[in-house]
Amino acid sequence: MTQDQQFLIDLSKMRMPFGKYKGTFLIDLPEHYIVWYHNKGFPKGKLGQQMLLVYELQLNGLEDIIRKIKLDYS
Image (cartoon, rainbow, N blue to C red; front, top):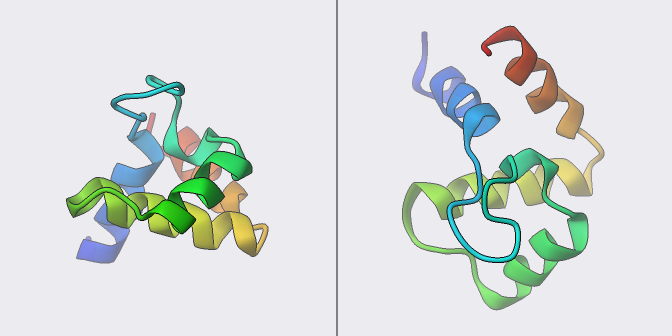
């Protein structure tokens, strides 16, 4: 398994660790919340990288890719 594949699997299982949407899978965060973070600045580290990818996926309507991975690896 490549690092990119593992990153997508990890993203599919990651929940927001804090804030208003604590406990929500990152891929299920409302678009307005992800856009707000995009404008404000994503957190540092892996969480920020994952949220940036969620932003890109939502922007392009591709979030179902991660939802399918979530089902396959749950």
